[in-house]
Length: 320
Length: 320
Image 1 (spheres, rainbow over the protein chains, first blue to last red):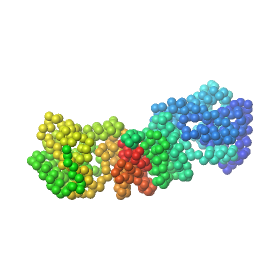
Image 2: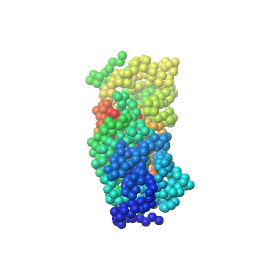
Image 3: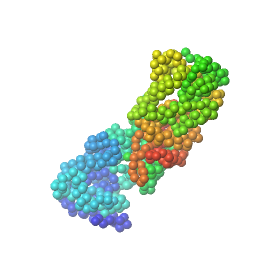
Image 4: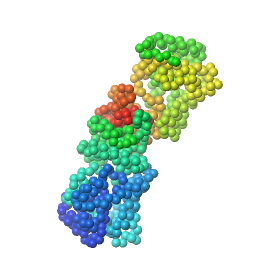
């Protein structure tokens, strides 16, 4: 049974000292490894591990090719300022290969999870020689699974590490007693910049969740560029979430004065408190036209842009 | 060479008397037939033919299953008020059969044209025993084809009537010297009601042009209901054109509290002078929300509604 530390009981400074000592004691002179996504949980774990182990912690950022424009470089830059070197490992071909031919959203998510753990991160862990894995698991993540040893064995299975081999491997989960609010408090105390906390929620499958139908490199390029426009024009509207979605359907448009099929981008921008209910943000029409105009001129192949005007429910925040 | 009658040279009353006499002289005591779509051209031809021939003109309205809610009944009601009986012939199964499995927009249009002429109207003409066909061809229709006899032979070929059989058949095209503005003037003079002229432009392939991907009865039902909502809420906005488009792409939504895939409807509403350039109508956000809400509640299976915010070009008025 994991004993929860509630936000009101958390003393961030003491928590940090304690976790740094625990990691240091556990790893000793060994080598540890962790995967940083740039999200709050993995960022906090990276900072704790770095304080405990310095260069004996290897932090990898797995570039899966599904990220927003410039995302790995931005995360590496933030951590470099904090004195932490991040290793960006480009594995986008492996993810594209894993996603080829898959159109069902659930199967897409599963393919990304499998490619991440079994193929990419599993291989990196084995090849690194590191026997200590730092993970950003929080209490909310384990609520619905069996806590403790059994779950940890599952992590190894997920990584494709044979139970026979697991002897000597150890998983460290310094945030497992916290919930999101506690992790944020610890992150601030560790000096993580506002950029890490202020980022718009982004789904696990990243841009693959913003593509209807099969994920291909061409489609990722399109939705990535459209996402840049949407984030540039909507980041100051105070919206809960905003996104560009690339449709599989082709629509008629004009290219070089001739009828031709083109791509359609759907924009969603949500007002919401907790994501359970949401309404489309009442953007001024001039901004909608600016969004459409910028996407048309900056994203090759797009001839049509729509704005979602449905509430949740029955819509959901994401399309896929 | 056809000699054009320009609007400023047209005296509608004289034109009507002349054409009524021509039709009457040509058909004599025989039987003529025409297909009424409810558009201005075929409506005017129906009135001229009726004045000339009375009950010796058989006017058929071919229900192809691709029409808006209540459309055949509305057209029949308008003409009944004018003393003209219209025969509605339900051929929707033949059109659905012809459209099955076709996703390419051009092939869809072609399938509808072929089903209309070769299969449905060709058969009706042959079975009717009528040797005179009244057609609402206007000068704009022939501008890009070879006028005269050659074109008329093409009509028979299109109808699947063997050139050997065509002896005795005759096509009458009383509007062939006019353009649209002249046809409207004649229509008003004939007493056609505002409903015929005021209707929003509707594409030849009807609701099939408002469905992305294969046309099925289920999809026709959905887009027909959505079209009713859109026409009900947007008819008083002074827009050039407005429509509901059913996407092939499925998006995630909530049904009965569970995640489920659903349909998405795209609304387009255009401001335009001549359809060559167009901009999305700046509808108030409250109206957009009302559109989405009414579609969600009235059209089963739809979980998401978007509004198109692109200008033409690069968009086109229609999606298919």
